[in-house]
Length: 523
Image 1 (tube, one colour):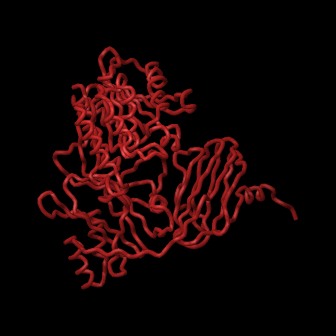
Image 2 (cartoon, one colour):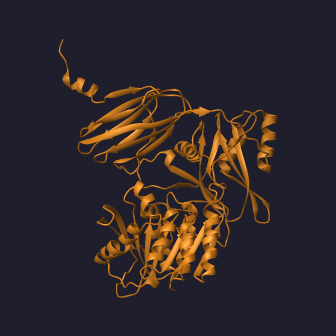
Image 3 (cartoon, helix red, strand yellow):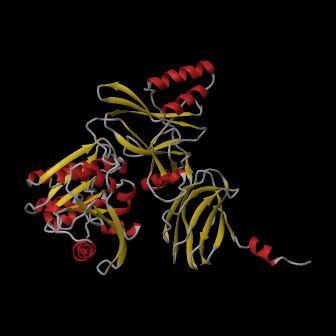
């Protein structure tokens, strides 16, 4: 019998590895150019899986497939050569991890770090406060059918918004499915919260009373295991299985990656307040120009991309404001800061502004560099500043230089200005992590205490925080921003402080970034 070697090659071009849920999973092997591999897992329903990977060069795909080898979820975003992944097993049986390498030969280390198993949980109870939902459930009881109800929901869109009184509204999230549980990630709560199931039907709901002006993004997760694990791990299990709301009409795609799946999209809602202006909407104004460069740091022993934005009709002979932005990729993609700058400049709300978007060297480096770090601050002044001046001409004054970021980025902005007020004379902090303390030290709100110890420095501040950024930590974003504000006021700093009706959320930060730029502008 003759052997068709081409057929054999095709059959064995995909290597298959099998691991039961009781055994460890770890791979360390060479991925050849233009290769594809499958790794089989046997998992229990409602298990939460955490894993990691590291390769010597970037590869194209890391995907989760079901028992029929049909795509479930992408575990690799931005094609980075290393990182972590998380997912929930929604049935008991076979799953596959699929790896594609279209680049040069690479060594891959891939492993399942831990599997958390489901624990029994208590079902929540809640009163129905939505007038619409009350009436529709009565109709369903009469007709014995929910078809008309879901058609109305689809036409109306979710969450349902019903006026209650004055500036208060009832907000109701809905989900359709015969699920074990349904949870809301985001929305008007500091943490995840449970939907209520109506009489073992496919109707799930969760209502809140909120105020006009609220603006938030959210996702819905189903069949999330209850884990005997730290709170952070439980939240990661939810995040890994959360998707956009199929009944929502205002999706928020936060990455420019192609062929993005439902796990990497958000849904949004807002209750309009005429006092709130969205400067991130296309108005047809002239666009600025962006250029991206890579900078290597001797101080930090790493490298990163930065993007420089120059406004339309840039003229180096004229004075400009200079804006340094942490988490640069997020502020370009999730917030579209360049569009906001285009609109604010065209409408004469701020001076023409040069912006420098600073990317993180890696996901891991962010948590080391952005919390108060003298070496990173030194990099900003000794390496980044001179590098920028080789790429774009501008006149630097501390009074025209703004440093901004959100969360750790807001904390970093205040700390770096604290060390170098002669370079960075203005701070725009969004939901800054002022709860932070150095490791192994009982010094919560460390930076606030440092400001309280010294004489006032020549820094102008804009701070904001969300009214829903509370309840997750003992001292959370909202409380610690209020305290930092109090210290700055006592020291007589030039300060604008703003609280918005929202959470730790780029969808809200995009609005209040513009407010901060206007407040700090030299116009």
